[in-house]
Length: 115
Length: 116
Image (cartoon, rainbow over all chains, first blue to last red; front, side, top):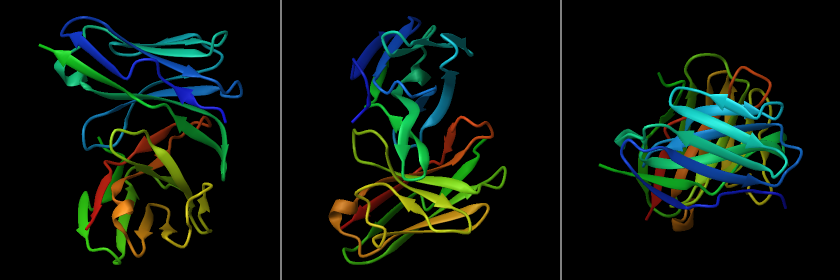
């Protein structure tokens, strides 16, 4: 079946540097993508989303890039801070669930920020 | 601030007992809510879609008689794990839809279930 996957399971980054988290997706029917941040023992927190008619979207310190040609999604975090340490998941909405389109989550990337 | 709450945040129970987890939408009425399960160091897996006023729809492989979902009001969905066993120990997370048509979801803080 189609799935969302990640290239890097763990990313260590120096405080103040930029982080890039990658995600590959295979469902060409997906038209909406979301990045979530999950801290230990907590639920996922919405970071930023992007629709398939866009290739870039910026938020506060974060940028999401979408390359539909190669089915690749990335999240860039500028000036990474200790509070950015978490697991980051990408999600897409192309798969059909029991009740219509559902979010399918990638495997997650752990970001560790070194002081 | 939080838009979805869950109660309890953690629970420990004996094998064979049932456990109820509540999920509340705090900021507006939610006709649709979702229940996910997350095992350690794994991603979120959708269990079921909770529909206000009607039966929940379950994903393939999820036992509806074991994971009872009740969406009795527009702000509350409950998940009851019946006859829990140690393999049901997991992090259970609910979510509600956002207000656009694109299925963005906002998640609760999760409930850690440990079955002894």
